[in-house]
Amino acid sequence: MQRSARYKPFGFSYNELAMAQIEVDRLSKTYKVSEREGGALAALRSVLRRHYRHIRAVEEVSFSIEGGEIVGFLGPNGAGKTTTLKMLSGLLYPTSGRASVLGHTPWRRESAYLRRISMVMGQRSQLNWDLPAMDSFLVQLAVYQVDRARGRQTLDELVEMLDIGHVLRKQVRTLSLGERMKCEICASLLHHPAVLFLDEPTLGVDLTMQERIRSFIADYNRRYEATIILTSHYMADVTALCERIIVIDHGRILFDGPITQISARLAPFKLIRLDLDRNIDGYDFNRLGHVIDHTERKLILQVPKDQATVTASRLLSDLPVADLTIEDPPIEDVIRQLFARGVEAGP
Image: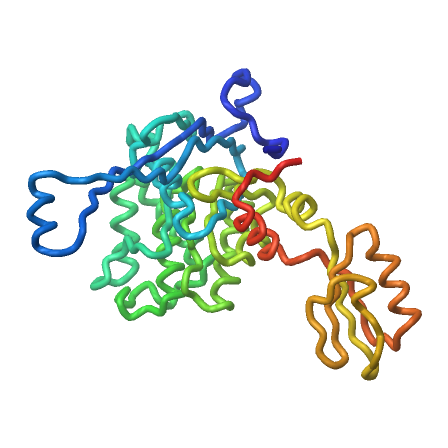
């Protein structure tokens, strides 16, 4: 598996690793799960003798992330993304392997480490639903023992950046999902974490709110040079924020590199989108490439990358073209291809 230039596994010299804030080396997590058939008799048997199955959620995962990077951590449901983030944030103890985040071993849960990281999970809440959001923010500042003046300044900055001043005094249970997610992010950043684990931060919110949250994450990264690992099923989140992605499936890394590279390696073709001035009958588009979609005056044609320009020129000369564009395939389709293959992306 070819990795990006930023990938530096364990074994490199100290100077080579000096810029890396997250180092993961052959990290694995296996769950021991009891199983039994349904019914009272099976329940009785299980009291005397239980059957177990071992599930490898993460299998010898290795990667390195430098300070200030925003890295997309992608995979289908059950791929091992959240398990990996929970180990890196100290919520789970691994079965084997090692990791270093900011020079600390995460699962030791040292106070000095926990003060420098944060984790936002789109499906979990750290806010008290019966209190105004401001009360939860004040509790967070107290828990992390943030200096009062510095904490107030940080809170004011985050409230402005997230545009949540109008919801601070409302009960959390009365907030919309988008407002609550922005408050969750605010609460997670009050202590200025150097490393941020974002697990589906835009889950369930509408498109406008997704865009606002993405804009905030990018702004926070620029201002404070925070290192961010982002998981999301919304590819717009990844393409807008990440230059590098790590793709994981069945607990194993399939790809680690620039987001542009995965398209070039797995999808060596271009899409030609064609709008015609009028309907054309009898023209054989299939001899030029693979027709993805064809409805009346619109056409999407897939052609080899090295033939895109020649094919476009031929279409322009043969047909009454109103508009023509040449595009890379959507990254969603490329990632889907990689999951379907289920093998490491080779050179």
